[in-house]
Length: 321
Image (tube, rainbow, N blue to C red; front, side, top):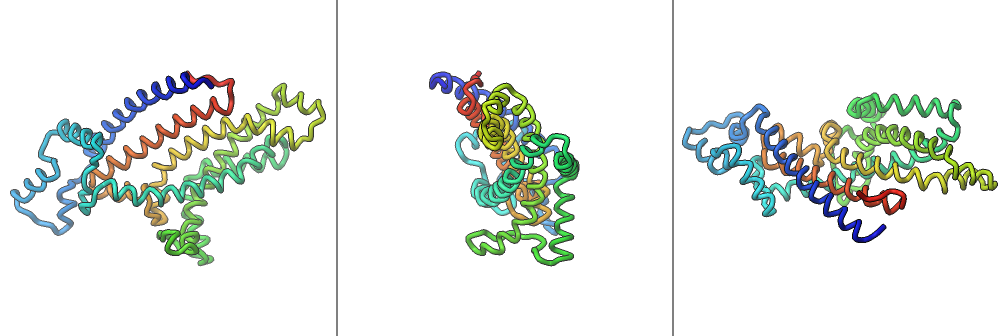
């Protein structure tokens, strides 16, 4: 992979990323303001009463007295300056609020993906090798079932079994690993399984499909004709090609999960970024919602760019364009 072509590609992707992120900021800004509710009333609380003068003062303080266009431009300017404002809910700097929640979500997503990959790789490869066998059919039924079943449905079933019936896991909550490792793992188990089972089914489907294509290719037939052990042919030679697709899927799913854990985090009281967005939408906390979604969009764009570059590093046949 030539260094200049990589640099040219990165510059091109960076320019595209700026356009994408600008569109994201517009969509976020419009969406949150079209949502019903009044951030000033939310700030005053359910029993809050204030004079018109007081309400106007709060509007000026929050910048809500300006036109939408001016609010957007001022917010965008502040973002470029690294100033994401203060939370309307508690007055804390938005960036601090978000940075407190990111490690919480990353822990959940990472454990879910590791769990899914550890099972999906052998299951997907074996299902392809044993195509049309009972094992293959069982794996297909499993993956189709969990793909069709929503993650919150899986979460509710897990909660009923492990928290209500068996009483071996706490129903919800979050405690940092540094404070209480055992309780952190207990609280993490059900939300991680809820997300992980869906990802497991998703990965199995991709790996099985890719493995079938690879093992029917000429170089695999040649390797078999040379008398190489099947385990070496499948898990060494074939897996290298499967890895290209797998990296793509894992990268995309990581970015998707970063913003897609809202329901699961809310269901299990796992106070990560998804939980924060849900709470902030309810409170009409514009700065927090806008910045959190913008952060997810930035992370998604960066992850996709890294994946595309890894493509070429793993498989020289793929050109950066």
